[in-house]
Length: 238
Image 1 (cartoon, rainbow, N blue to C red):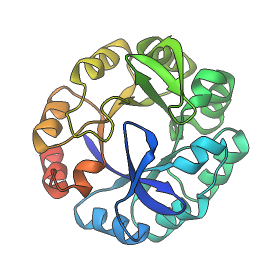
Image 2 (cartoon, rainbow, N blue to C red; image 1 turned 135 degrees about the horizontal axis):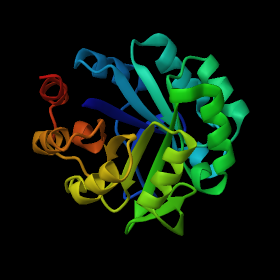
Image 3 (cartoon, rainbow, N blue to C red; image 1 turned 45 degrees about the vertical axis):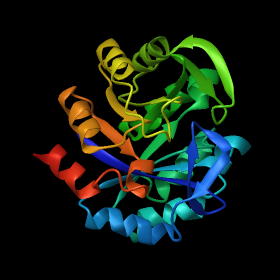
Image 4 (cartoon, rainbow, N blue to C red; image 1 turned 30 degrees about the vertical axis):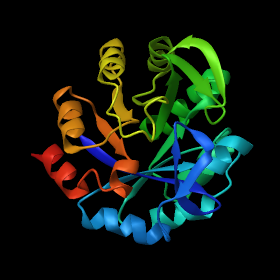
């Protein structure tokens, strides 16, 4: 299982939210590159980054921040937030981003996902974020009537190989991952499933690993030091 330490960006600064609420944004580090280099020292190969400004403005806002991490560190960057067009995808891929996460557009414009998969293949991932099991969009500010596994199956049919699943009610809470829903989506599709939201401790990492998840995104647990990142990487590589 891959450990994806997370850096969410507002105004070029690393922040964390509570349950996706932008009013709870709290800066968690001073320097993005310094934070990323710390992940490298702990054995990480990937970093999960989100353009929170972009998710609200529906276009890339902090592009230079993400590109600097991709070009100035050894980390592979997976990036979501505000990516709404083939031009956005092409720009990021050509500037060193290793994986593009399409979120709201998966629900609102599945044709874009189809076109992107055809053009870029496995570089394209889909983020499915849910409240009470139903997909949410636009930086989690809007809900839908589409059940999360139904959306996952549609994405699988399109050719998507990687899905990041977030239970919004868990995000930033350190209350543990939603193993039940993660198993549900993992069993519903053949895609690689990355768990996001609620991860607190090494016990969560072991549980996700043992349930054969592809990856785990760790944010607040790292910044609050409830999870030893190096230990998490070691456990997943054992």
